[in-house]
Length: 357
Ligand SMILES: NC(=O)c1ccc[n+]([C@@H]2O[C@H](COP(=O)([O-])OP(=O)(O)OC[C@H]3O[C@@H](n4cnc5c(N)ncnc54)[C@H](OP(=O)(O)O)[C@@H]3O)[C@@H](O)[C@H]2O)c1
Image (cartoon, rainbow, N blue to C red):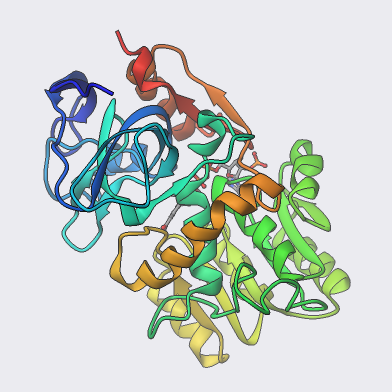
């Protein structure tokens, strides 16, 4: 397939600056890389924060975007695991240590083949683009067994002996409607956790149950009411508490629900005071890091990416519901504004970069 030398991409021009769709070069593949024509890119909860708060990114202009799916159009030297024409999903290239990288809000993406998974025929590009960051975030935090990984260190359900291993143990996932919360629910179900208790808006209750929640509690209930209902359903404090929201509103509840000696998984940095309080009670707070390319995640990424096509094909893991924004890459800024204003519920926003004018 011919690969153009130029493409369109959405840039954040400077820290807390303007967004602009403009032309840039397609990056040539190095040894081990593949080039993908991006058919779908999904918006995440972090991109508007990077623009509004000036966090995480150290070098501008930058192309953001952590989720993508498309067709392989070129292979770098030595790549044997993929062929031109393969349908694949992938995360943006992000180096958290340096705050630099290139995301998926563009038309042609160049990425090491080792961080890519094939998409089965029954999954569309749009659906596939909702998977990479969400599934990585949930999976690494619950199952990564690498030394010093921020993880509950359970045995992954895609590894021998992992499926159903935690039968009879309870799990709480605060914010099951978030993109990665939906994957955490499904992984917890594959692991056999029961009950699986989640919070969200009740209009999403059926969706959350379809992903594995056994109990859906209204997020508007007071912490006391949620604690009482969790205690009743779980029979006591819970060893695995995954706070998919991780704000001042959810941290104290997550801590209160975690059993002494249990694991509290958070996606944003928790206040020092809360971490200290947890430690005194023998609880561990793990700050989740869902990026495949981060060295501590390499080993688990390899096994997960190898099994992901099968898990998606069988329905063991279902993608998020998705909504396509019109205008290709030009639709992203409006979508991020909706996310910032809390106007997106239980659905992942997706663009088709090839439709960019
Ligand atoms: N550390 C990492 O590696 C990592 C990776 C991925 C994401 N994140 C972070 O995780 C957060 C979620 O991101 P996302 O893109 O997955 O989700 P998202 O799609 O932005 O989440 C939206 C959902 O959050 C739910 N929600 C909001 N406040 C809630 C509350 N107090 N209780 C329960 N549910 C609540 C809403 O559920 P209802 O509609 O049902 O009310 C809404 O549907 C973001 O802060 C993101 O930056 C971190």
